[in-house]
Length: 579
Image 1: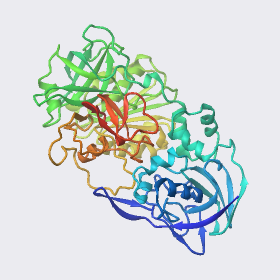
Image 2: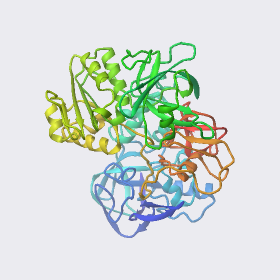
Image 3: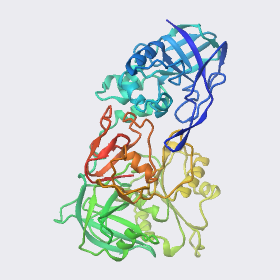
Image 4: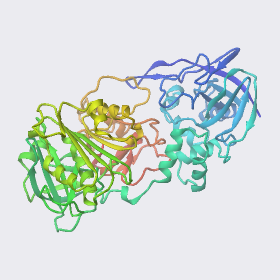
């Protein structure tokens, strides 16, 4: 069937890269003699990023001698020694288009099961000095694959590789890799993949998402920005005001999903317009804060931040009747259909998206048990207290608890506590373990409350969060540094199109010296999310609020309309990105 040619190991080390430090175990080298293979890895081996490599499902990486010969010819290189592709086992045989997910093999004393293709990661390109290598492995159908260790034992170069059993579905590694990363997916193969128990949970999750992708309701109601008229401005608390919008001709706006947000562009006295994103606190047809929800108009609620130009303008400069450029509702932090219990929890201005969810539940008199939890400084800063109370009264099984961090409850307020949520106070509320929880507020609040809810029995996958401002960065393997507030890039200003990172509040001009929009975002310390950096994995996919881009490196599969892969694109005109 095949032969084990080399066993390669290497411990993680720090490697300099683009002014940063990457912790990686990609540098593997052959070892002599026999090595013990245990559940998590080969003796003497390690992985630098356990979120993407290593662990029980990805204990051993395999690459083939035939692929080495192929890349030596394709790349014109004669320096590719065993271990160069980061693999633990270099083998003769076992090609990616013949080995199937779920196949079981015996090598020496150990037995293994194929779990998934190689993760498309920039570090293989870093190791080889070929930045596009992650894309090349996919495009040329030569990814390599991971093994799970079923039986621990010693292995060594020269061991015969024998097939123990064939995986169900007979879906090859190459076909599985293409199914995730390449266009033209075969629905039958997608269904087959979901029925293979050995396939790693991460790949199963990705395939489930692909199987349910493309719902029209998830797409923006219109491209770019359109002018909407300010219908009303209503103070909600000491530092929060609501702004309602409608069309210029009185026609209804497309329905928004509860929990989504709007991006608005305002001229505040600075050159050009500034873009900010605000959660919808309701979708309704009149400017009154007590209006019933409908598809007629939108309402955002904005906290006046100290020294905030845009929030200050909204509170002091915006007037009823003004026209404001608004992008269609977006966002995936939305209330899901279901019949089980629901927890809506917020702190401060984080109340806005969960209030929209409460509007939806109250409008339909949803029978699901509901727990409404909110934390505010005091009554003067408790936005929507009366509105939420009225909405809760319409529901047949609603419970609420309010926490004031700087004010005590009044006599008879058994639903108010001083302080913040605790394990004991949450346990006393009787929140069931099968509830779906939606959390919005400062990061520390969501982290702490999420941990408390998990400690009370809720599964982590049932806890949904919406974070203010930019999304949390995802930069695999890069050594963490102190967080820096997004800023203008260093050096001379660019002369190209304007690029706006809406969540981070940064607008800057493009410079042709930048390799990609991702490079520009990193120069501004805008939090970014990426893995392959070559247009394969779609980790960097970002909603394109307005504008157009060109791809400097064509992606293997274009992203969905209205989105862009920032790792391999540049602006063709002024763009606004949801970053």
